[in-house]
Each structure stands twice: as structure tokens, then as C-alpha cells.
Amino acid sequence: MDIYVGNLPWSASEQELSDSFGEFGTVEKATIIVDRESGRSKGFGFVTMNDNEEANNAIEALNGTDFGGRALKVNEARPREERPPRRDNW
Image (cartoon, rainbow, N blue to C red):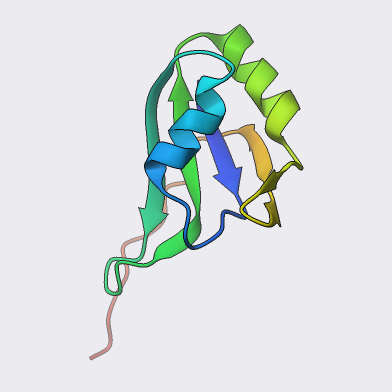
């Protein structure tokens, strides 16, 4: 299951994210989304856990908890929406 994790502090690392979810089961992958140009965190990421029961337990336990001074928003990730290609007017 892919899990969306929002409201992450800018200083959060993928390892810290993985460790937090690892308390509830095996983490396949933890990714923090970064801005392409600045390389700075966008404040959200995704965690992949193969066991749905472990993933649901992690979602219930971590949603709203403090992580680096911010209350996490944690839920099952929705599929990415198809968007039309961007057109630059430069």
C-alpha cells in the first residue's frame, strides 16, 4: 500500500520517515518529494508498505501525531491524476 504523508517539516529525511513507519511493520520505500529546481522538500512524501494491515495500523497511529514540531497528515495515497502537459509561454 502506498501511504501519503503530508505536513512534513522541511528538515525531515527519508530515513526518519522510514524509521517512524518501521515501528509498525516493514517499509519497502520512503520518499520525500522535492522541488526540481531548488532541491528543497515540498513538505510531503510517500511510504510504501507491502502488508495492508501494517500500513493501516501505521496510518491510524501516525495521523495527527507530532513529527519535528508539525502534525502529520497520513492517509492512503490516491492514484495520481492525469494532467494535460504543461505549455510554457516563454
